Length: 355
Image (tube, rainbow, N blue to C red; front, side, top):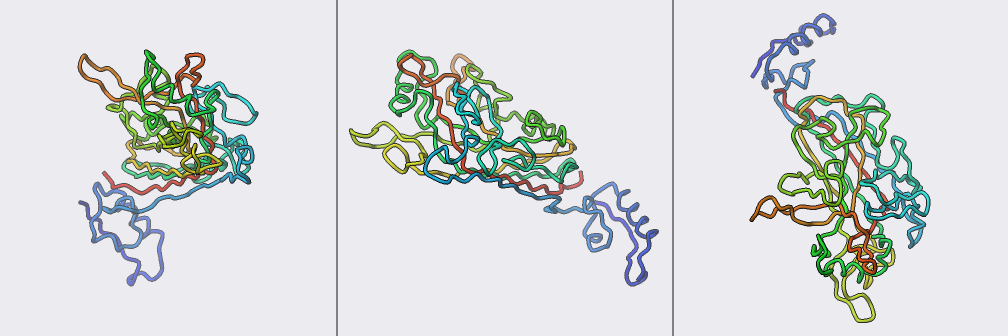
């Protein structure tokens, strides 16, 4: 614990002096440890040297929401439609097409893909200057999204098709439950450039902000056979978006299961009309970096499996589904997309303790 003697402005010196201020600042910055409570009341304290917590350096949020004007997906805007890696869908124009490991959540308030800063969920911090993060600073990211609908895959016009994925005999990776197929929603960070290009956003480890953390996302894990062990991957940075669940029905409907959301729900085939997901990710900065922006990304469809790590040990894992659901052609994958009506993200940065 350090103690620094500085000169009060009042009452001894009713007129402030640059000489006095400079002398005080030099004394504070020369301190080799956190200052004690005797100094907290003194004018001119450099708050980064105080032995305290919870001083907010920066806070901002963005909500460029696309709001549907009717009970159908086209009224939401094609940019709000997100198709999975397992899908080959590329039409209509302006959607987030299938075949990509992840998508930036970047549809604007008109439902159109917009990669500009301040559109979608691309949150620019402190203009083009960014925020200079210091070691031990605390970063808190919060987000939410309204899932407007689960979009049936190319062949998944009926949930009965998905049930075939569960029971297909002799098919590798089959057997994971209908409630175990999901999308994920997560923030990524740009410490590269204030241009905020989508390719420059990384998870907290890839952005150089934290050390030695392996986060579940397709940057690290790829798809298909590249299984991600839940024993080694951190999942505290993401929100799970569920797709389906088992549901009682009648013989004239679809007794097997239901989507979590559909524009015509609740119904026999949908539990909700729409539903909201939210999340929070907080971490301590390990390396000083300039943080220029934060943006939400989404990826799917993920499925549970196991990763054989030995002759007797089976480690739960997940993988990014590479196959469509087309049982007529012996394809037993999952290729449902999601429609996001609106999304928002906010960032708060707190000053950390001086080491």
